[in-house]
Image 1 (cartoon, each protein chain N blue to C red):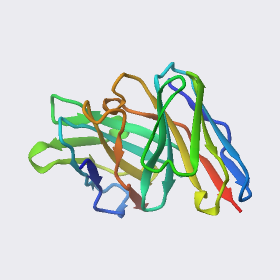
Image 2: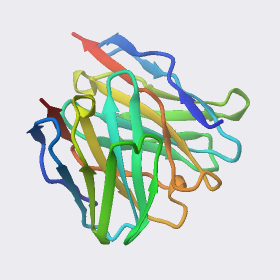
Image 3: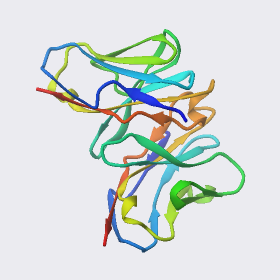
Image 4: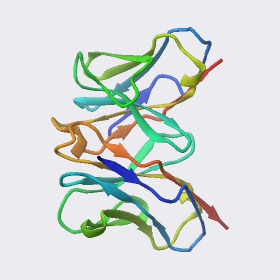
Length: 115
Length: 114
């Protein structure tokens, strides 16, 4: 069974800090995604990656960056955390050259609070 | 533009009653449709998917969904709801022309009363 593991379930950081959220998948999936989830807004795509060292912006990339040095690991970086980045962050992965036609497998999320 | 609309923000049903969650989509090509469920404090889990063929698809936990192309709908149903079905449900659409993206609806939160 596919497992997507996010390194932290809960995280509290201060404004201005550089924050790293880590995600690892164990099924050799080509594609990995980072979303943020806010009440009433559903899931919004921040960044995705379709191969090692390849990345593309999603719908709300401002204030974030990503890193994919190995196929199984996809990191989300908040360069200088701000209070409006307090949210639930979800990592997901799937396979295929065209990821939009495949279901995604999700981690349990990281609830991030910026104080 | 590609979009998914879930008209109901929340729904309350009695345990044992039937359930229908609505989903309408807009997609410029053949849609690939998904329903996911999110229990409190957890990530999303795939309930079912529709790619082609029979327009009534069966999923896990006794759920089913019907694809109606003429109505651009993909409604989720369950004949008898259990208290453990209380969760948030997300409809999503993707496809071969949208690249890697999957478009998610805003979700419907289901409450189950005893």
